[in-house]
Image (cartoon, rainbow, N blue to C red; front, side, top):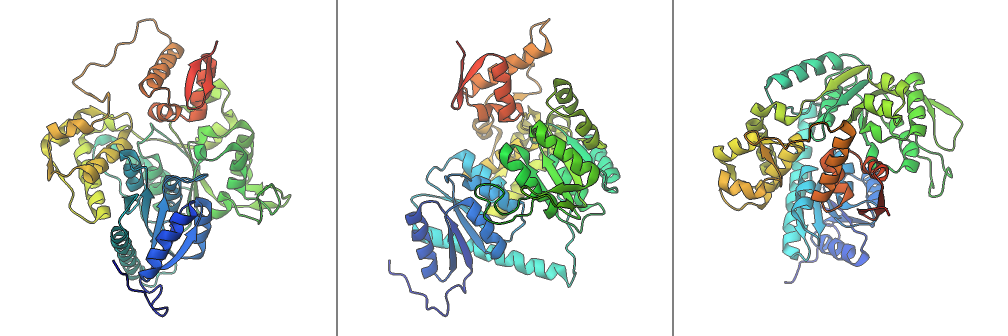
Length: 475
């Protein structure tokens, strides 16, 4: 098919696109096609380079490969999601799978496309993404109506069950202050959502909201990520850089999964909480910030303190205002409303009609215990919307999508031997979970609601020797 060569005067008039791919030939091919279509295109070879590019240019569309060294496409999408960009994101992959597609959509991706793809398909999807971004820009400009300060909007919090009513009441109490907050709850319950609600309804709503996913940062890079660094502070520090605390000055900083912070850095965090002061890596200059810190964890911090893995003084400094987010199994009456909300969001992102979910299927979902909580339910609804081609999903059609081992309230819980101690129960649970996931640490840790490093430590205590992603018994 012969393509029209767009004159130079028209180049970029259709929109701005960022193409991210570590494979030079593939990146250049996609960029060339889009330039011929009239888009202004910038190319990046890594996720880190892309993050720097979005600080300089307001793109309409970002097209990123999934498999990249250093920062994967999914990790890039997650980072971009925290920046509230208008750019719509398209994930390109030769390794398409249910999990990657669902994860990308849940993180806010506009859509995904599988290699090898048809060029007309790429053009069509890019055009839809750009139009969607432009529409959001127009709506945003109209809604601002001349306001000088942007005010954070409270996120949607679904559910009218008693636990949710009590949670909203506690959030309202806490949000009115600027005190430090500790949010606890199982993985997937919505702890970050609660943190955003506190920020958006509190006195700091005009300031920035900055989130740090502690397990995602390597220990040797965490200090620089928090406090920033000066040029030449370490190999690769080519220029000075502000950290997350400076970025959150006047606003709120969320430390997600705070238990994954090592003891040396816990002492430095304690100092910032007490004195509101720190030094960048490689500098002796003391900097002062006014930041409200919200910490979140799925662990019992008091137990971590007793085990010696978390400082007691830091625990007391973080737990000034505690909030516990209820698991989904304790608010089952909210499940139908959550399903409707997630389905509506998915329909909006996809820009097309998605299958109806029959009341019989809703009833089945309401009866299940969700170990992954709201996040797991959202993933399942997204999976149904993206991959099911039927107009209506019944209970029978739903069962093939249910998680392996999912249990309803009517099923009896597994029996535990009488007399087994808590440490023995913990070990049994870890071993059974590893067995279920074929020894895969990351999957097992996610299912258990703990960090990979914590799982590794437990396995070493049990006498298991590490071997890549799996474990074998030592000796």
